[in-house]
Image (tube, rainbow, N blue to C red; front, side, top):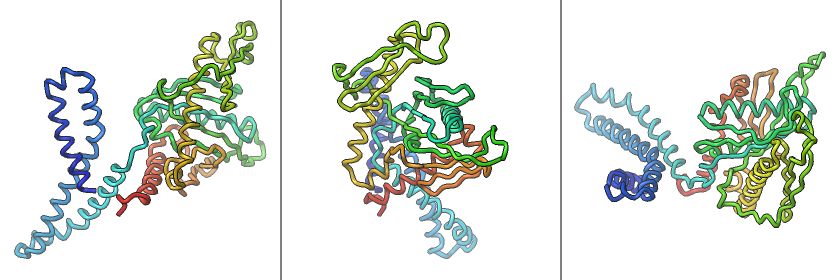
Length: 358
């Protein structure tokens, strides 16, 4: 591990020189490549340098104790060593995790589909709660949330809502959200105070670049029809709604949010591309070992991943056995602790299957 870290540090120094080289500065393509490489390894190199500084302090403390000539310094060194050992152990784990192969999809933006499951209106209200929870979290990180499609029930809930979230490393944080989310609470209409259980499904798909998914439009059946639902006087007067069916896979996308058929076509094609890209990635993952599939997340939407218990103010993530008693804050977008603990769990599992764990 430390040989690799030393090589990365040398590469970082070489890149420091390269990005101020006049020949590199004059070639924007090469310059941008060097800047990206520099940014990619900066954090791990700084962490490694912190580790080396702590190790130096630890070795000095051990040397003072071994020398035994300065009693006061010896006592100070003995007090320092437990803290230094703890910090070194924690940094060592972080460095091992940082050296794990990166998921190539982590840098991508995402398309998130949230659908009401069992529970009628309560499930639709919960789907709306999840949509707002993710939107508020995105705001804290400076991500942009764009509503692509929704089927609203009029009381703050959605039978279905599809959004695009763009920003830095969105998929790396959101990718473990796919699955069934269950809610337990007393509905406002419940006079007996009984707790009802409802559910919503979430699917998080990495948004592909245009060159990453090639759709032969000869394989796509396009139907147009008149919009229905809320939308003002233009509803049912023009064939603006669009349904796209990808014949080889059977995937279907319907879009009627825009008054323009052209805009509905563009949105439907974007969502279809994301679904096809997710399908391709899932098929690749299925060819890998069970350990690898567990590490990246199966994305199985039938899997119950989490329970939100409102009477107890409790959130439980069933995959990692985590319970947090801060449900109000979480529903208001305070997801950082939850997401970090989930990531650490899967990174730890990944470490077990690599020689870096040794």
